[in-house]
Image 1: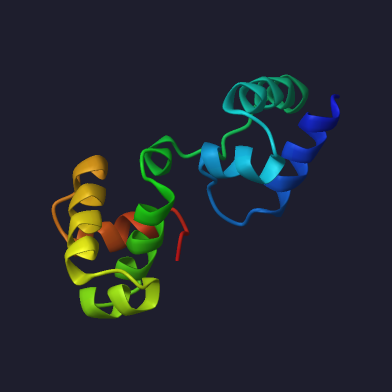
Image 2: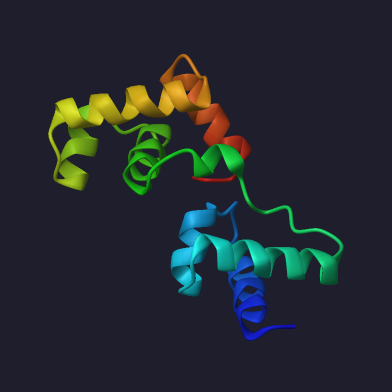
Length: 119
């Protein structure tokens, strides 16, 4: 097993929740292509690697931050204060998250996040 595959395996083992591929690549210090090769190597070694959440990958890092806070019950004003952004920016991120995940409300977003153990 390559050194990168060992690093990716350790990162996946330490993560208690689904991992966005771009976050995993950043943590492993590799490119998306290198990550894909390491995951393929791990999949061949372990039978399967099913911790990458493709829906979560659709969201930017900031959208994931906003999504987690909204799913925890924060109001837009509280999210804005927590992340040092405007309320309008929070509204834009929430709208984008709902569109990308094909959800229609904050309640559905919370259920989606709970179902993936993201809270």
